[in-house]
Length: 250
Image (cartoon, rainbow, N blue to C red; front, top):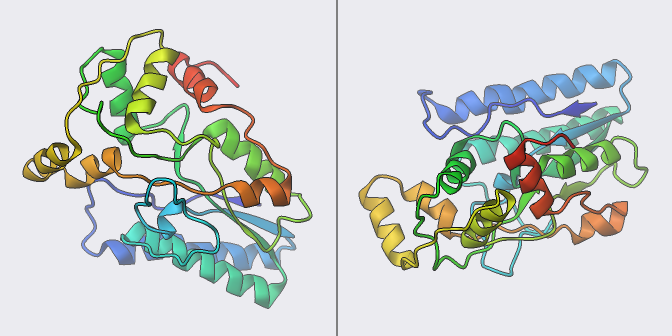
């Protein structure tokens, strides 16, 4: 069984008590599902968690590792972390095999939010003030995530473990713009605006978090995933972007 249903990260929160709303779906709902699965004789449950259980940023070249202490900073990340702990408790009580996968940003058909806005800006040839941004962000193409999920449903060494997943290549925001442009057959239009100025403008405009996602780093280490499961990304970031931008099937 694969469990990926959730109350997802909300850019504009409308709940009076966001943490309670996340817990109701992501923690309580996950617990009930796992208990029902165990009662029905399901052998293994693969849970799609989130890199947000670890936090929001990393230093460039210092990715999150599975052994690091989770430090979620928002209600969504907190609820996903609590859901993971709930699953391990159910596993110990029932014998249900649990596998946890923590993806970073997932892109593919249907992608929305900031990624979609950036993609549309590149396609329209808008100049973007990201030329001086030298961060590093891990992402995962939908093809790669699905491939790992499928592997984790049956691999004998997956049960009882938590895995990070990504394309295996971390890009800066400027590098992502260049890759998007290349996938569309366009020339990127990047302006070299200092990062401190981008942060200042974002703060003044009420978009501090949006700018942070464009200039901060967030990387994950997938080497343990490769080693334990013998897994490799099935598409490169370049190929994943090409399929997305040209809407080609896998």
